[in-house]
Amino acid sequence: MLKVIVISLLANPIAKSISNIPSVKSLAFKYVGAEDIESFINNKINDILNDNYKITISFLGEHYHSQEDIERYKKNVLDIIRKISVFQNVTVSIKLTALGLDMDYEYCKDNLGEIIEFASKFNIRIHIDMEQSIYIDNSLSLFDLYRKEYKYNNLDITFQAYLYRTSKDIEDRILSFDWDSRPIVRICKGAYKEPFDKVFPNKKLIDENYYNISVKMLDNIQKVYPAFATHDHKIIEKIKNYVQYKGISIDSFEFQMLYGIRQDLQRKIIDQGYNLRIYIPIGSEWYDYFVRRIAEKPSNILLVLYSLLKRQK
Ligand SMILES: Cc1cc2nc3c(=O)[nH]c(=O)nc-3n(C[C@H](O)[C@H](O)[C@H](O)COP(=O)(O)OP(=O)(O)OC[C@H]3O[C@@H](n4cnc5c(N)ncnc54)[C@H](O)[C@@H]3O)c2cc1C
Picture 1 (cartoon, helix red, strand yellow):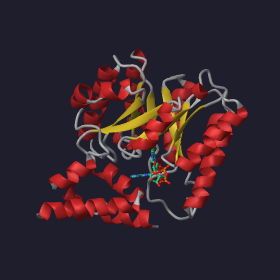
Picture 2 (cartoon, helix red, strand yellow):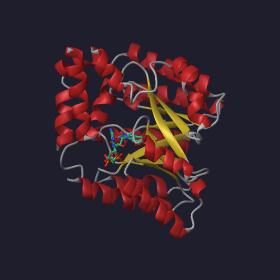
Picture 3 (cartoon, helix red, strand yellow):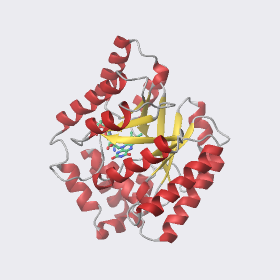
Picture 4 (tube, helix red, strand yellow):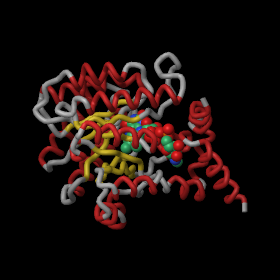
């Protein structure tokens, strides 16, 4: 409930003006890798990769309604693909509403196709982030089209455990298909404000669903490469125990976490020998992403208030 209130308050256009305050921006850059890919490559990428983390880069942008914005987003993504192709273990995450899903399905389809085709030439994987539930059906059809019909094996997808529908979606769309090569399926809890009839009503039930889905994927490890995207150490421990109990190779799946969150836990997972990918947003349109991160932990609201107070001094 608190999460829904925080998202509603901060997403308000008046509240959005706080993004111009330098202390708020510097707080946001705890979660954002850089304003552009050049500065990320010049200043950060080697340190992160040398520490054995894998990376997915997400160029910030969503809900575009103009062709100009969408073309700019696409151009940036293509540029990122070209520039990261010299590194190992780096993939790219994208949002379909930044490629036109809110405007026109066919246009979005063409834009996605262009990106996957370009990325396939460089051997780069493209990962579709999952947005609000109204986009799920179209996102899954685009995934099916390119992955199952056109056989682009470099395309991967995300599901959200807070939704009632997800367990069945994973069974129907992922586990019952005969893949040439396993897709990476990211399972996260879900970050958006959703209608009450679509999501589990509390954290306990969401966590249970998350774990049950994780087990379902691990039980079908020949069909899917699960990516457990969570900072929840209790769930992570349960997954590790299940993997050991079933004798599943630790190279058949990975954990994923967001840049700047629970770095202690990130280090521990790497030191224990597991694969961990850090999701790193890049770009100047960081506000909506930042709001979702603030909403996830009540004490983060205090950090925002503190950065606003710092400005008054
Ligand atoms: C790699 C990755 C990709 C993602 N992709 C998507 C996506 O495509 N679509 C989507 O809807 N959501 C996505 N998310 C966000 C996800 O849905 C959750 O909103 C987010 O990960 C918080 O949930 P949690 O699993 O960490 O569990 P929680 O129960 O929320 O948190 C567990 C613990 O982690 C810590 N923590 C969590 N969030 C924060 C934070 N913001 N600041 C400080 N500490 C925190 C706290 O200690 C908390 O107690 C992604 C998350 C990750 C890690």
